Length: 373
Image (cartoon, rainbow, N blue to C red; front, side, top):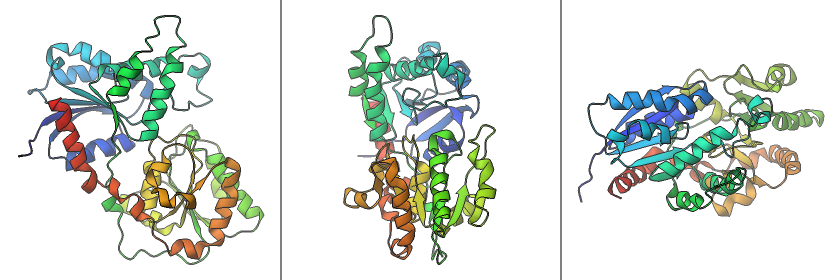
């Protein structure tokens, strides 16, 4: 049967970072004709309220009728569809959840949590899932956590809680892992330093990645005079955790790199230079930075929560997971002590199936299935 090329419109209210990477790479690798309607990735709360109006106007100016609309989770899809009903009433719509505001841990310094204004963003995610024909999550963990949190969320309201809608959403939900351009991170004959072992941080510099626990463990290594080296990659923010201001002084002896990687080539070099990826995150619906580091053959030390178990084949999981936070430091210390063994093993095969070369056919076939449903 001949494969058809479809016209798809992707609505992305927050085009930056991993959202931009996913959107533009899917556009690049897909056999379908994907047009991206987007807004800059800033002011996320305003995007969840206002992007529907702006993107509805942009959609109405299109010169063609797409076969499929894909929205991402920062769009108020119900409002968008209401504003474009004359054009969209017969077009199938999928929503892709990179994250959700129902189970995302809010910053303790955000005043909206105290004022209980955070519920409105969760409600936008809920009604958007209701309005879509297909609801897609980037991991099984994400799907399960969102659906399980919906009942408690809806029970907060005074009446007409509509609990039956949870099953409606569940029935049209499935998992679609992120496609990643891992091939561009491949390196021929990578050279890793000899002793000591090199520890990597390559996540966002934000509270939900739990940097305090990570760097406290490294300070404990210093206290016990256990030698290591440290690579800290990432982008600084105005409201980043204070620990990042102290790192250049705290780890002056150990630091090999601190700050933003100026190019993808530099990022690749730094990942291949590292040996161990200790993770302390409180939130990860998928974990792009974790997958990228594993692909570059970093030994992952992972909490047995969040989405990470989906990245490690079951026969190998006992080598990489810790159950309790108190187990993290002993695991890290033990790993540094056996660094030669760790360097002589391969971890890339755990995650190579996330490369677009493997994922894109699954994506393209799913879009075709939704269109034909």
